[in-house]
Length: 211
Image (cartoon, rainbow, N blue to C red; front, side, top):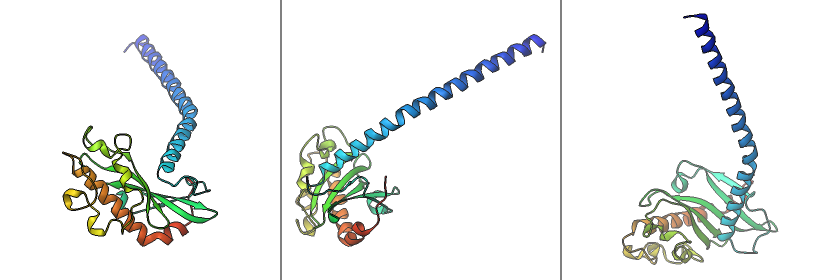
């Protein structure tokens, strides 16, 4: 290999190295500029979602900061389950649990389940799913009001045997051609109520974690 060829290869390598350094610097700078706005947007989205499933004006604490993380595979798979607690002058008002219905028709269905200190549901919302448009996506509050039927219900309303879709002898509507999706949501909400009923004091008494 001639000296000229060696010099050309070295020069090309140097140019490529310079481009790599510049590109890395641009990426780092972009991340630094966008990280905080992204975090803020995600926080605002979380607050809006929590407000949808909590009673308005019933609490005075920072619900997003009053958070507990637990390992509850039956309700949230391998990921930590977050519990957001609403309080008024330190007294428990409600808790919002991040729950996953693993048996949706097209995959897991992510839910926020709000439960009052009295054990009644303050609201349920679907925050993530891959259900079929026009069929299973009717669980989304932006599509229909089906999900609103859970508000005010408890383990005793309806009775245990009626916590199912109508096709299975229960009180909750299913969708034409899409029974699996609402069945999965009803089961997940019922299981969450059971978990809350069994761990109510511990859920409110545990120290908060700042997200």
